[in-house]
Length: 403
Ligand code: LLP
Image 1: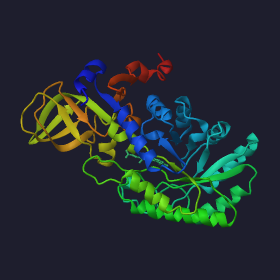
Image 2: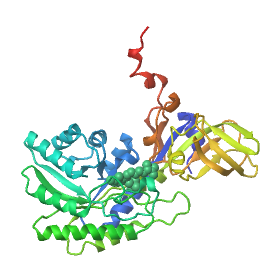
Image 3: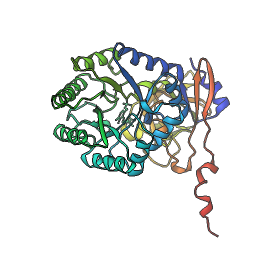
Image 4: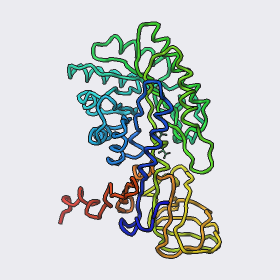
């Protein structure tokens, strides 16, 4: 049991709390699922990019899946070795590509024919060879929320199979490109195995057809996307996941690269807020807390469900309330008609499953400083990010004030 009261007395609210031991256990379970096979777990930094979180995974031997040069730099700072860092994303700038090549990361995940040309040109300018992988869009419905579905041709991600094949041939013939991997990622919060298996089958077939023309890849990058329990979802077991993938790779000697984000961090995280007021408009009851959509956007953006518990002495019967923040938007809510008992000023409200896509999707909307972040490891708490102050928020503007 985490003592949220003690933590918030020390670190104040709103506050992100991450259980580092839980993260480690998740990492171990996934790594173990691929035992007996060469594999790299490349933590998807976007899920929670706090340097201490990334360092925690680095210490366990994790790689990093990055989607901006900022994330690549974070991975380096946190101690992830270059040969375990990959760089994905549909819109890499020339500067980002240049830095990734100079830093000699494992590979750049190329997402279009036009991008391949840029990578080749920049590698040529640098007099280097860039290792690449191509993100294939297998046109499979991942059966998840449309905003986090990525493997259909309607989505902007990756390239279709025939384009991928042409790109591999081009890369293989280039002096400045070394095609080493193939990648697919069909979506996030996946709870069904079939779409993953189908995609792996399609991509493995492409690997075989490349072998037939003497293009030998080394890495089979299965993306991330493993779903977690926010509520009572049935989720995929890491062992079954690994078996399904490995089942598609018969006679292929490839290193598996897996890019989990949410699976590793989501249920390790709690977002803790203080109750400011209760109020009622007509028959509608609201609990106003000091955290808001700028801290945790998922409910507002995706109507995402997060379990919520209260830390209170109150013994009243739970009644349906909307849990809302102080931001000036009706979309600023954490849950609607959620059963909570009557709460008092300064009681705590804990939003669960907040360790992935929580802090990272935060903003300073309404000139609100972002929360502090705290790690719990071996029963000890430590600060891993300070609370932002008003001074932090205006630091880049102040000098431009004119009389
Ligand atoms: N690899 C690639 C290429 C990705 O695009 C993503 C996530 C991952 C790995 C990690 O996916 P995960 O294992 O965490 O599902 N903000 C949304 C999720 C966006 C996911 C974007 N890509 C949310 O809050 O649900």
